[in-house]
Image (cartoon, rainbow, N blue to C red; front, side, top):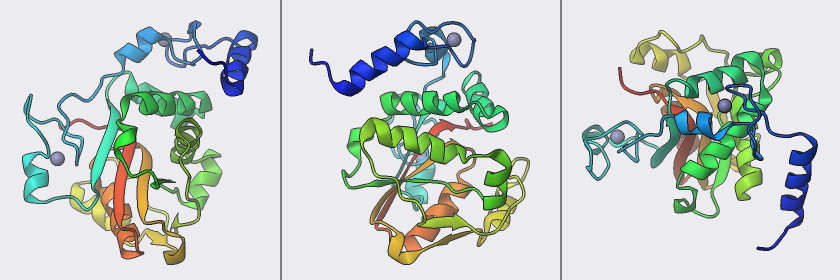
Length: 238
Ligand SMILES: [Zn+2]
Ligand SMILES: [Zn+2]
């Protein structure tokens, strides 16, 4: 087994500051701030449709009936976990408690669970932007944080400045699908010359898929040829 400088540095960091689980608070006994018991509790998506990441009938090859009838504008959506306990706690720890280690852990789980090798090699990561005002209030953009860790793990390039959220929108939770779409209409603007051909949108959670669809439409209109998406979690159907 070869010892590379990053792996040596990783082990050294671990010796100096041992991993502590962001979920249970106990020592993780490994080079990750998530213990293996809590990681095994993160509910994986089983028999998920490769286009919308919602569950299909066991053993069915995708896409699901709804994506066959009306294919989404994005080419694929992969998520590492179902947005249920304790995956939701990890997301909330990052977004509402500002626990940045949770973002790193989410990226590490995504890197291990998602079929990252299946996408074009020249694809660039594009985190879903927050409105500058909301980002200023939170202090960071959770999707950018996850994308930065993913880029470090897999060597992808991150695109910044290609898409911005120029209109602040109401929180999407509690809104119907039609209201979500109205709420987001025209909220994003792309800079045509800055949009790469192959894009992987990165987000923490995909709930109804409205944001993903609006962002995909904006990027395709600005010249993107193919848009895929990775999320840490996917909200299961009610
Ligand atoms: Zn734990
Ligand atoms: Zn589907």
